[in-house]
Length: 343
Image (tube, rainbow, N blue to C red; front, side):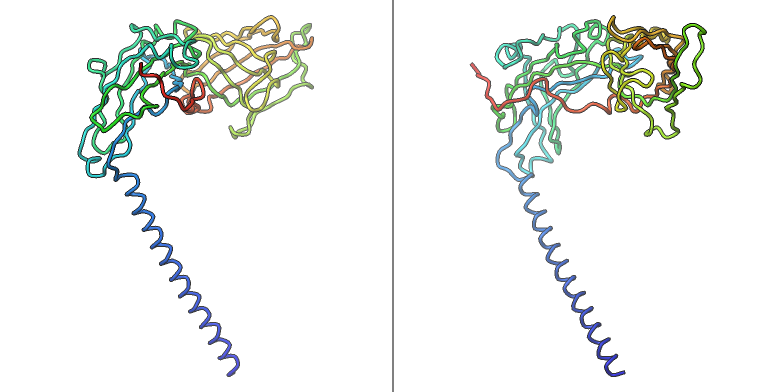
């Protein structure tokens, strides 16, 4: 028994020593983290000089055109850095700027862009062209409101055509960052019905003589779980015309499809028509399709012909998520570190 007690005592001592070591290591880690936190606070908040700038020089803004809206709205603005922590929470900074079309002639690549017509938009602070950076904030911005009807009437607004060029002039901060004192914002749009759709449905060979499907050829691609269904990609061609990639079993599961396996959806006043995209794409015969705006779902009923065979297809396409959630930050040209000649 003495040996057993001795063994237990040794084990208990090791356990106590381990607990002590853990406490010491934990304390050291906490001290280290608090030290880093203090250094970080000083680094981000305690500077002697402040500077303002445009966050990106060549941003590409994709706006979502929605039913029932008259304007496409986005924000322009400036950032501020190098703030002294005592002023950061108490002072409002002002930044004057100007519309500068000369940038389209001096910035590489911008010569292909077109100024957004002035009667197509308004800027909320357009009376004084001043950004205001409130106390405690790192950004000062304001809305730009584009007339939807005028903007979408030009097919060029689907691509990188229209631009708004701006230059910073003066500020109540200490300085303006020299190589970030300008921006050229390119604006385009997509319709809210664009994006990736979950696709459920079936396809079967179609006997053109009997006008019936061949039952033995029927293929179903329907799952209760959305994520197990194939995707279809719909792109905006206008507010009433869309490109659908894929048909029946043709196309990639990820949503894209070769040009031959694409078609056109025409959606006018709630009525849907499926149309052949081009002479070198599969022939399409619409058998009666529809769109439900409440749950953003297309019901497609059609026949397509490929390689001398015809196929009857019935599909339901349900929008995976709002197209705005699919958008990411983009630039119309990769930015370079450069300083524009002030003249």
